[in-house]
Image 1 (cartoon, rainbow, N blue to C red):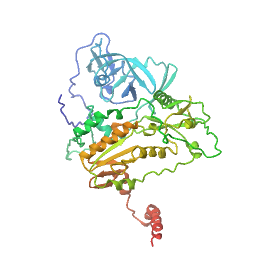
Image 2: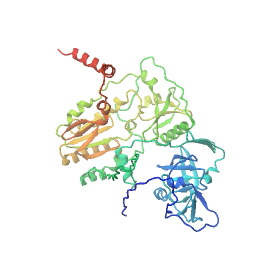
Image 3: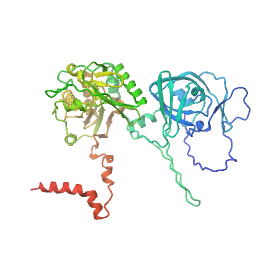
Image 4: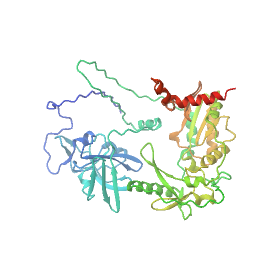
Length: 511
């Protein structure tokens, strides 16, 4: 189906009496029960009676508007279709909007389930067009919760659901999150609509120009040989369902300094919603088999770290354990040395291993040292966790051992980032095939969404690599390039004094 792109300029006026009714308005009166919805829910705008929060249905995120001004629960037709919901015939034909309009009801969905944090909810929904959100939860759902506490300044809503205390945090106005190009391209494949608007003051008599912005993909299509490789080695891009194998001399060990006593720290304190998140992540790791219950005399505390996408990562604070660990002096490659190996290359592929450290087994004799405590339990890792002082050396040692015959020929490796480089497309296909075969043999798995294949330029370790040379990622040197020019001597001393000292020190070393 062809979609037409339309560009609008909207001006706001105080007097809206001449406004024509929208197409969705129906003049005839409804008989019987008529559901009501706020104007803001239809337009996708939050106000003082609404809180917008993030929910989950399976692995899909939902933007949910909680509105005490709407009588029922509503879901958009697009969200219902994407989630694969079964839409039934509704008893109501229209929904009344507060401004007098009537919206047609497409149908209803019974017993729709979703999660807020780790708590499962279920309710019935009407299917109507919505703007800016996927779901509206009205009084129909709010009435089932019992006493509710609201804080509209902090955009928080708290209530007790069963035996759990739930605290929902609204999405604050003006929040902006970064998104990587790979994820943006993935969103575009789902027919998401992208828009950009720039607002400025307008004075009568000024010239006004309107521009349209077209986004087009610059990624070149992969050749058929690369697609054949994907089909042949599709298993190395799957999420592993079993633990990695034990590898002789490459299982992670934690040698301790002589006379060291087991580290035992109490867990850090967390808010209720963070405890719920910790419980959820721990349960996922138990299900995956990466951790198990522990009775070890060791115990390190956990910390929650927020990712760029707003979700949480569970990390263990191993600083106490690291302080009494004998350090592994395995050489970590220098980025400058790696870049020197790329002469003559014209085509590149970057392979990102899936949760790289978790593809290394812990040595059975050291599993108990990885133990950590949460507010609810004591666990230990069966795979190498993040945060151990010797983990980078162990992982780099494994990668060097597995790919030793390819290194500096057509492969560079820096921890879990593998770069394959070649002088032609034909040789590149052969090189990728050999790398994939080695990954399959050694039970190494990659995350395809983070990989780039057969491209003429690639970003690797903060550098842009292409046939004509290597350049630094502009974002890495932006602060230096935009350094303000000193305007007086005092400013110069404050801004550049430390750099002058460095220059003098290096100058003293000259013969």
